[in-house]
Amino acid sequence: MIRESVVLRVHPGREAEYEAAFRAASSIIARQPGYSAHTLHRGIEDASTYLLTVEWESVEAHETGFRGSVDYQEWRRLLHPFYVELPPVPHYREVDLTRG
Image 1: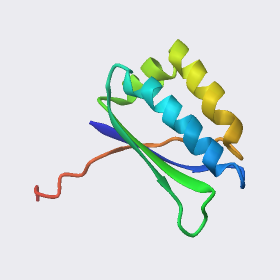
Image 2: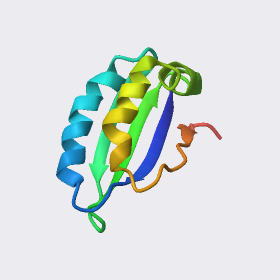
Image 3: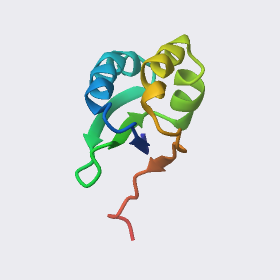
Image 4: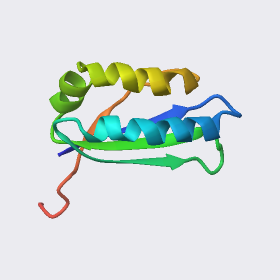
């Protein structure tokens, strides 16, 4: 299991529109092969920022599967117009802290 975590900056004043669009887009990502779960958190200090976290079975499920799909084009159409800029989207693997 890997986790994609990205900070997204939305154009100020468009937060409510973005959240509505994200609700619609959630079903797109949720039906992707290799998808497990996602969360969207809104910034407290800066209400125009969001933290998106998505759990995938593998990096390939995200990068090749989802991003290479027709569904991704719809995801982009719904969400990308709200972003101030497109940030890098890094992936993370959990560290096993029980092992010495």
